[in-house]
Every structure is written in structure tokens, then in C-alpha cells.
Length: 381
Length: 220
Image: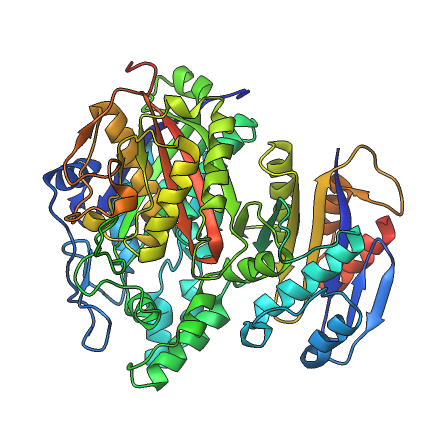
């Protein structure tokens, strides 16, 4: 049984809907998508011209796109971050512009794209000296980082951890996903019969987690609880998920066990829901292995925010806490004609639910899967 | 207690299994795949090995040696609940450069998907997990200090936290690699396993790869 609770005491993010968790929540509830035309590099030979980009970010020589997102976010919260806080950075490509420029201009600055360099900048911004590390596990990166933070708190290795997640839409990534023919030409349509690929997105966010004991001692507002987690690997294929969903269902079972709850207590599910044919089908199979024919409200944010890669897990965990507080799940944006496998589970309208427990899942290249059980703060109940 | 039950390592000239005291010279990485098949370190062909990036190849070689050292047989079909965690100095920087240089050379017309997939630092671990049938957690990590001892501690903590019963901890670079099999054991017995804390302490006291291997030889 859990020995110590891991509680978020602060979180915020910037998403393609704009600055702040509130703007993302409002955007998702409105049912409109933040996927728009890419204007920062030529897309004429790409599979799509569209991605969910953060308004007003501009490539510059001095500051990477992820630092343009992180500097204001962390600058605002830095005074509230204890200096002994351990930092976990989750990203897939980080400051990839340095590498792009070094190749295009034949300059030796590719090394500046390494994520450990970004980690050092973040620790400086946050004003911490409690150590840090980078977690990289494809699209599971930030949910794995939050799992790790909760695990460190539960095992009393640390009582204050800052998880930072970020990724940006770049030529590097867009050309790569185009080459895999993984992108929807227009906009991702998770769980729709006519889905045909994902839309890339960008985001950055942070979550400051503390042990419940420290949060109480420092009179911090507790915004929920990371109650359980599970990480697994399909060991099946580099770019495709295991078709029967067994890897993801095992991650969910591990998360439920780690939280010490029954699946019947879970009132809603934030799915990875990329909009690719195989991912969404695999997820419905995995979820049905656990929940049988008893649908709970299930949604994907990626028709709205795009697939924000290494930041996706954290973005979805933050939205998961919003759903617990508001007792509704947002509509699955761009859903027009629900796939038969998702009927009765996924809707184009918001759905209400009562349970104070929600599940957030992610899967990624290499066959990685994560599941987290989130609980509403007992103080709010 | 948490123990290291197998350690496999390789450099440009040699490879070895520390607990079973195997130490052999080899003729270079180019011929090592056939040599490993011949010696049955790979129990079946590694699918698509020829298109792996350098770090993926080194990850697979060192994993095969570590599993052999721990006496763990494997099959692609029968998955085992073993996690795989990796850390290395530069992550996937070389693969990122290879992919993007190739794309720029094409006149920004065609990016190659088989180069793009290796731009994620977790992919070499995924290649190993597919071949060796490892279905536990998979993570790539960068630590800002003491890379190998931090990786070993991280793996030990995950086992102690009941997140997975055993883990392969891999540090694979282009010229050398080492993999540790870490699991919960009833007791520590010389010649069979080594306490994780002893391995961590030995790793912390060394600077170069050769020094580290020699330090481990001293505690087996």
C-alpha cells in the first residue's frame, strides 16, 4: 500500500490554445481545434501543411522555441519552487533548432541541442540545486516523468520534484513523421471512422509535486494526487503498437494495483488517442480488456491540441485534474463519425461523471505504454 | 536484497561476461554479429540488425552478453517481465545528425523514416526489448552527474518500489557498452551475483571504461 502521497501543488502550461491551463480547457470544451497552418518553415513537400502551433512563437537565433515557452512559465513560478527540488525534464527533441542550424549552416552547435544542456537551463530558471535528470521515452516521456516523480516521493527519495515537459513543431520532426506517412493531411480525428493519422502539436508545462506531508507543512494548496502508475513495453514493433492492446492493458492493471483501487472506481479516461488507425484501435481493445462492456467517458485531446509528443503526457495529466474538478470530460475534438469500437465510450460533446478518480494513458514509438491513476484532492472533496 | 546477476560488456577489441569470467578478443564490430550468432549469444537472428544505428547494435550486443552471464535464456515469442533502462553520454545526437544531414542532402525533399526512428534515444532500448522479449518498463535517462552509478541506483529503486521484478541497465556508446542484469535475490553469493551497492560504489570510483571493468573484476 502507498506509504506517502505524491500531490501536485502547482502546474501550468502553454498549449496551441494559448497561455495557461484555463485557455486549453476552454478551447477543448468549445470543441474547436487549435490545429492551424504551419508558418515557420516550408511545408510544400510535407504530408500536411498543418500542425497545432503555439500562437506568436517565432524561431529566433537566440532562443529556442521550447525556451520561449518555458521562460515565462517557469519565471512566474520560480519564487515558489524550493531550492532543494529535484528536476525531471521530459522531452523528445528539446532544442532541436540548434542541430537543424548546425547542419544547414555547417556550424558546430549541434551539441547545444542535447537535452542535458536544456536541463541545466531549466534548473537555472527554476533556481534549484537539488539535482536533475532527463527522461525520454518517446510520447510517454512526460507521463513516465510524472510516474517517476511520484515513485520518488512514495519511496521518500525526495519530497519536492519539478517535472518539466516540452516539445516544439520543427522541420526535423514534421519531415520525419511525413516520411512515415503518419500525418493526417487536414486535422487528426481521434476515434473517428475516417481517422487517417495524427497532427503534430507543441506545448510546454510544469508540475511541482510534493509529498503530502511537505505540502501540508508548507501550507501549499494540494491540487490532486498521483495515486498510481504503470509502465510497460509491447516488445513488438518499433513504430506500431501491439494490435491486441496487451501492453497497454498491463500498464493500466499495474497503475490500478499501484493506486490500491478497483477499476470500478475510475470515472473517466484520458486516452492517448492520436488519430492513427492502429493506435486508437489498440487503445479501445486495451481499455475493454479492463472495463469490459461498461463504458466510462473516454476522450482524446489531440484533435484540439495536436500530438504534443514529449509534452503530451503532462498536458493530459493537467487536463485530467481539470476534469476531476469540473466533473466533466471535454469533447473529443474533430470526432464526426465515431468508430464502431469506440461507440458508447467517446463523444463529440462533453460528458459528466461523478467519480473522484480518473485514468490517463499514453503509448509511443518503441512500444512504450504508461497509465496513471489521478485522484481529486481530498481537501476539495 | 537487490543484486546484479549478470554484467556484459564490449569494446572495439574485446567483450566479456564478468560473473562467468568470460573475456575474449574479437575482430571488430563489423564481424561481431556473425560471431555472436555462432557463439549462440543471439539465440535467433536479430530482425533488421543491418539497419540498426550504432547505439542500437551496441545495446543488443551488451544485452546478449549480460543475459548470458545471468543465465537467462530468451525467446522473441515468450516475453518476460524485465524492464530496460538506458543512459549514455550523447543520447541520439549522432543519429539526429545522420537523419537531418540526409534530409538536407536530398534538397529537403525526402526524409528517410528508417533514419528518423533512431532520433529518439529510447529506440535502441526498444530494438533490444523486441529481440529479447522484454515487456517491463523502458526508459532512456540523462543524468547530470555520475551516469552509470545514477542509472544503477535508478534501476534499483524501481525494483525496490515493486515497479518491475528485474531490469537491464544499459550504457551504450559508439565504442563501448555495458549492460547489468539487476533483480531481487534472496542472498548474495560470490560467483553467482554481486550486491548492487557494491557495483554502484565500484562504478563511482572510476573514470574510464577500462578502469570500470577492472574495478568490477575486482569485486566479482
